[in-house]
Length: 232
Image 1 (tube, one colour):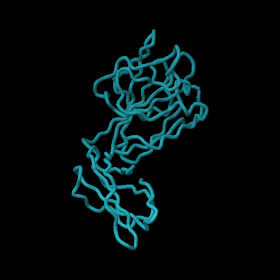
Image 2: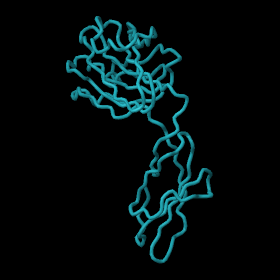
Image 3: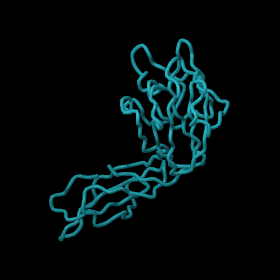
């Protein structure tokens, strides 16, 4: 977006792949003060300028700004446990030391990842609410995957039996362990999804003597090249 020019009747947005140009016109005749540029390569830095147009002609280019599109593997997270939905969040780059639950992130109860198999390090993930384990509805949460991916639900091993909705998932044999005084082991249950799929997550199936689950998502493609970027 850009600041409105008092005498402008439209704007031209221009883009380059190196600072200072040469610029090519992305869109001319823009009547508003914002535009979303599409079809870009993730991780590539683009340089933008805007010019104002009126009956007398076109202004000089604005000062240049840079923007780099970043791919979001997880989107459209909807949490039906409305009491605790504010504790859920989409995260990137899970690592040893990542805080697992949004409602165990401060005070005396902070649960962090202590052991994480290297295959999952750096993946996008969903930090959830530990106390969503008490939710009893059919669908606890849904989200969209924006590339072919494997979704892993990290389930507390103390939950037994596992809920019926997990029957379509596969126990990978991999585990995540947290850093509680009595460490909890979470088995990773995986399922493959294609780009654009909606992933539905059911209830924890057990409330006492256990934690809720959290989610790790790993793209199954070498790279993602298409995404939108807003010039700001």
